[in-house]
Every structure is written in C-alpha cells, then in structure tokens.
Image 1 (cartoon, rainbow, N blue to C red):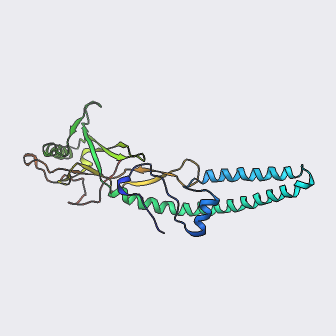
Image 2: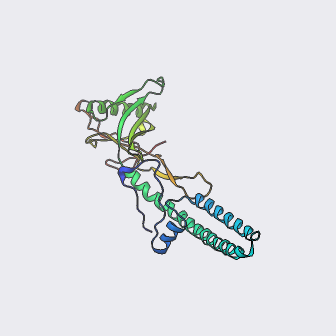
Image 3: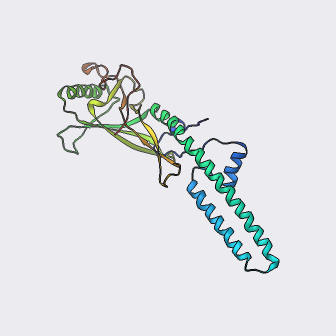
Length: 264
C-alpha cells in the first residue's frame, strides 16, 4: 500500500489524517458519489439518512397526489432508494479500507516524527526541593551553560536526587503560526549530544508516535495526536573546556546513538 506522509517541517500534533489511496472508478465514486474529501464518514452517513428520508417522503406523497403525477413521483423515490443503497454500500467499503489504511499511515508518519529535530526555545531545570517557580535556565547553545548543565546532571546521577527538566520547543501550526510545546523529564534521564547544535539547540523523540483522535465512536480518525513518550535526545553545543564532561548520556545509551528519546 502506497503511503504518502507530510514533510518533516510540517510535523505537529494535529495533522489531518488523509484518505486511503484510491484511483479510477473508486476515486470517482468516493469523490463525486459520497463527496468525501477526508475520513469524515459520520457526516457521510448522516447525509445518507437525510437522502433516505427525502426518498421516503416522496414515496408517501406519491400516494396522496393525482394519478398523473403518481408514477413520476414513485419513479423518483425508487431512484433515490437505489442511490441510497449504493451510497450506503460504498460508504461501508471505503470506511473498512480506511480502517486498514489508518494504522499503516500512522506508523509511517510516526517515523517522520521520530526523525524530526525541533528547535529548543527554552531549557529550564527545577531542583527536587525548589519552589515551583524557582527554575534555573540554561542556554544550550552556550558552551559555558552546557558545561555547568552536564556537571549538574552527573552529580544528580551519583546522588540519586533528580531535578526536573523542561524542554520548550517550537513547531508550526496548520496556519503557519509558530507554536510552543514542552516536555518534562528528570534531568538524569535526558541524553545530551554535545557538538550537535549548529545554529540552535534541538530536541528529538526517537520513540514518539502518532495516534488518532476518535471523537465519533468507531469511525476512523480525522486528526492525530502525538505521544512524545520515551527517551529524549537534546542536541547542544560542545561544553566549554573548563567544564568539559564528554557526552552526557542516559543509562543504557551508546555513544552517537540515535535510538533514544520521547516525552511524558
């Protein structure tokens, strides 16, 4: 099955889910008979019911009007009934196909999400006993700040008293507006990749995934949500020589590994 995904730069939590691939007569029926432009099957079913009721009303009216118009009205109601049957069967077939396509597309789009590096706008750390409002902020593009942060991370791993880090990062909305999201992790659990920040610090979520938003029972999803679960990779500048601590890594990670990362 061919799967087209959104470009990496369009990665965001609320991506519209596309319809399953279709061509030829199948595409014609879906587009012109059902009027489907997205997986809005609940709306199609409601419209089918409206047409069915209209056909029923015409059939009832055919019994109340004169003989001259009765046959014409009955023929119209019969045609509407046939249209309703074809439309209902087509809706079931396309919805079943969409149910099969959705998890395949979610997997493919999740791969795009996992490989996308978001620009870090702000990185803060709150100690375990600090006031909720007391946060230390670090500029991950400044070698001095990175050196201090790596030393703090190493100390917390040894002491077993982790502070909580908050990574605020940017993404573009569907309207092209810059939006901000954030993830929270214990500082020792983060994986910092030194020297990987070029123009800006970045964050990736190698185990993140997309899931469908289901607002109408068992119908296929029309929009996505993302789950930024798992480990988190943060690309930072190289630490200053005075505070050089090498690559700070989450337990079990390997040097240069790109298989960590995600959010709570």
